[in-house]
Length: 244
Image 1 (cartoon, rainbow, N blue to C red):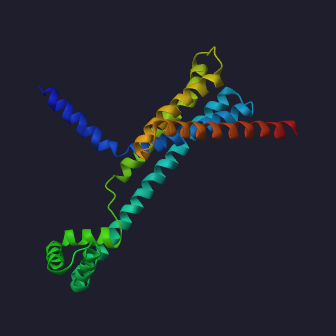
Image 2 (cartoon, rainbow, N blue to C red):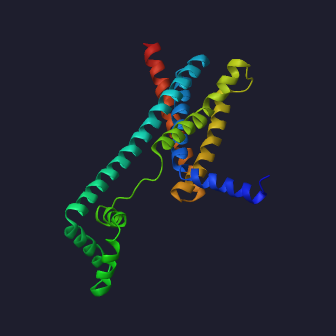
Image 3 (cartoon, one colour):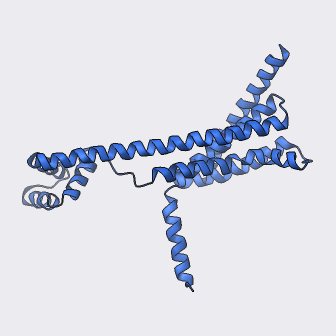
């Protein structure tokens, strides 16, 4: 039977592994909540039936979430592919023009303040290992660092977050569809979505390393602006189309 220390260590290891994807979870959640709530507000502003709100909401939730996750995957994969392409080019340069590649290392460390015998010693030490050699060239010459996160996991986390948080503005309408809800649907949807914005805004502060209050207010204001615009656009279009 595993000890308590082993269980805690396993939990911490799992948390540290996926903590790197907190940014994808946060921004996927923000986008999911904002866009889905905007759809609900636009539909309410246009006076659409609750069934239509559910249909539009889920269509947006699944399609936009998938599009955003694919975008996150392709963006990360492009960065990785670009890094490895330039890394391969630097390796070719090391193999075919080692003196020029050595001189580049010397220039890099000279700019860092090394000189004389110490400079030559550092350079000689670095070029004894090709992997270390190319690492220095990638970082200090091309200013490129390797993306360690998995593109697939980034896309998956983005999609899951988009669905989970983006579903919140639709919960009350789904509840009302299966079992009549006696309260004000839009009011309760607004309350639940605001709570979602507060939670996701709080998590965002761990990514942006800003104050908790600032992160929460920024997310709430963003959601409120999107909702307001969508509501009045829906209201105006409903007046133009049906009024005309």
